[in-house]
Image (cartoon, one colour):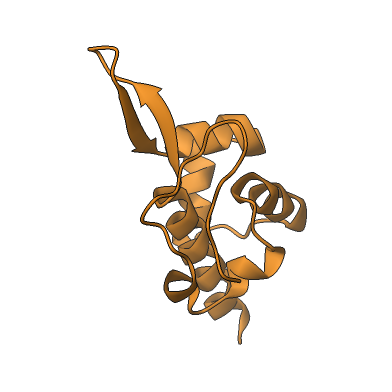
Length: 109
């Protein structure tokens, strides 16, 4: 796999994991709802970068270094290899994925 294709695969998988991992929050009516992890949250809570940098990682515009990839793997509770997997969407059951303090990502990797 060449560098460009690899970078795009990592980018695609970061976005896939972020948009299929949910956090329990309260809406205006004080009801519990589930929202996917926003780029702002991931940027601030995990990588200490701007949300624009997350956008660049997710589009493949910028490479992500190994330490940040490691932090994402810990956050999503997946092995590092997950980011390089070309068939990630087929391997993860994301019908009920909830993120609170501890990750509960259900995967078959």
